[in-house]
Length: 277
Image (cartoon, rainbow, N blue to C red; front, side, top):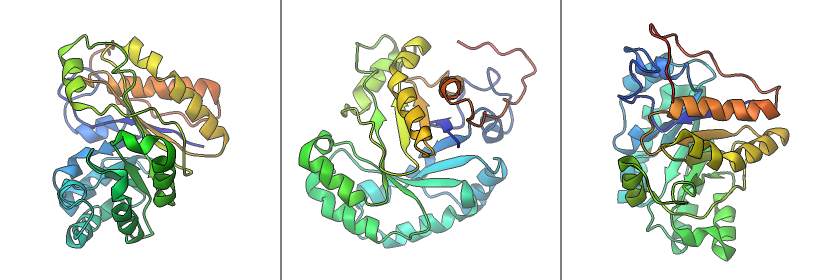
């Protein structure tokens, strides 16, 4: 039984010297969290040596959820991208078992009418990886389109991006105001399709508001663990300053309910005492 938790990134200027020592940032991050969103691969396919260094800096239990490049998902919209896909899959091979899932984030313009394209793409993927799909068109979240997408996904997971807490009340910081203009307003979804559900949760810059908004996910994750599933939860805030500590708090909240859950590693020590929140 294991719960993976993490953040949208493994490096942040605000973390260095505050909750993580300077130096090897991924290695430091991996002492706080046991998973990370691989967002950098959305912008460019990394070199194999770079990916190998990611594996070397993380323990055997660490997991990456790696996003497919935008050339595949947004520019080519899952069509005629065989060469780009082959290059990407070869590049990430050094992650080995640390590769938790390949994350297919689709543009907001990808609508229910495009499902045949997604179906062909998923059917053409190699069977030796797990896949997770994120959609942003609100039309997918109800009625027949929702059922059609679940059927199309087959053995892939549907990744919810829960922004409901962010949009519950008006923004109170510059980072929140920026997030209001950029983040999707999709309906809440808490249904898991596979043994490895993946959740992206966006809270507020106020840690108390973030914790208030994730209560439903503590309930859902507890239920999934008791069903024998192994969930992964990524904690975001608009400024992400406290995200690693909040990810650990989320894990602790679940572990209070499921004491047999494996604990997270102890964070890499700092020269100065930690000052959080």
